[in-house]
Image 1 (cartoon, rainbow, N blue to C red):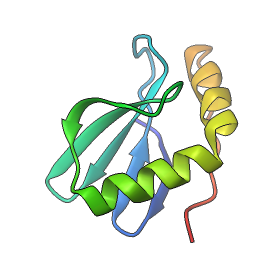
Image 2 (image 1 turned 45 degrees about the vertical axis):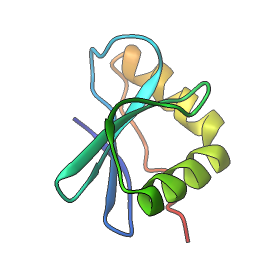
Image 3 (image 1 turned 60 degrees about the vertical axis):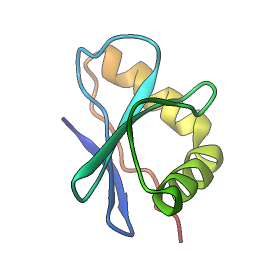
Image 4 (image 1 turned 60 degrees about the horizontal axis):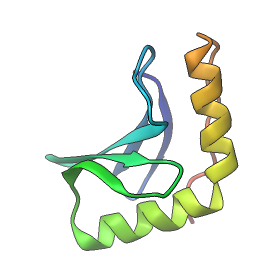
Length: 86
């Protein structure tokens, strides 16, 4: 599973051959979540509120890049790092 970004202990990844809707996975310590890209909702899992806030801020800034990554991964193309939240 390619890692596309890492910041403040949050690891953001996408799976090859994953299913719709477009989404990404976040790991934060022992917690994890699957986040839908279109509406930035937590589809599965849980993150602490502070981590959720940072992920939502980051995903809002990089929504088009996330959609581009989803499209690339669906075509078995390599992914590129996305700028972390600073």
